[in-house]
Length: 431
Image (spheres, one colour):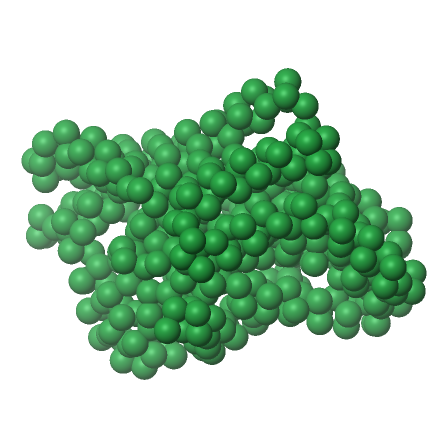
């Protein structure tokens, strides 16, 4: 058996065995990389060199700021104001609380960029409101997890920044704009499904729409939602880079929660910063070891082999995109999202390029796919966060999610096979 083949088996085999034995993904990646390099007789210092190289990126400086900004907003109870705004806008509809759930996550996702933070912060409020209104618990929990995925697509999203680094040469501003319409499409898809379920089950309407109440809720929540405009408009208009916009948004968020809403005190800041640093340490560690893992993948020519293999199955763009979607859905259920982005992007980028898919469209498809993985067993983190706030078992939550998997995959196929969803705004604004 060829040396490259054996090395590939060691790399992937060791990685998946360690994952299924319950080891942390950071150690699983690092150990499998080191064992493969030992077999190839490549100096182990290569791991450290590639890890440092992977972290030595100006774009990555935006990540800690986005993480800190999301934690500031969550600690500042901006969630209550966003839910009130969503309720004023769509709560009057049939199944109004379900609509509020989706729209509230859309707003909060644009601030935090984290589905986990969405479920942890908005989830208790949304589930309580839906429970009081007589909604079925399966429907409520499934919708809460599904709607949180919008945060990955609607800018700003630190996962998009990481994808741009992994893909190389993709503009962060274009990536932000590329995810905006798909995020809204996902929200509309979930709202349509919620409306159908509400009509079928007789879920109630909310209070009648009031322009006065909507304006009041908008003015109350405008300070929080301005964070999205600072980042997106600033980057798209070329006023500042993604990193600069993230830093400015952090300062703005601090001013809002400390002096405008006064929901955070100065003595609370060390605790918020500590939480952000813990998240950042995990993220940066994963980026470092994933970069080393990706170097080995490239050294073994796995992307070239995968491209040739998939093209030997079919040259049809439709077939290849379906196969890639299946691959991403599986990887999203088994691996951490950041690791998946860093490891899989260099592998499948040549495949999609061969059938005319742009890196921008691939980024949206990949992030959406991996987002579905966040609520898919066995390692879907949203299942475990929702279990903590709802008191329901992972098995119950998985069963409740089955109809939503169908809805999410429907939206995913729309975004996959209608490139305009991902490319229209970047083409319009960056032409």
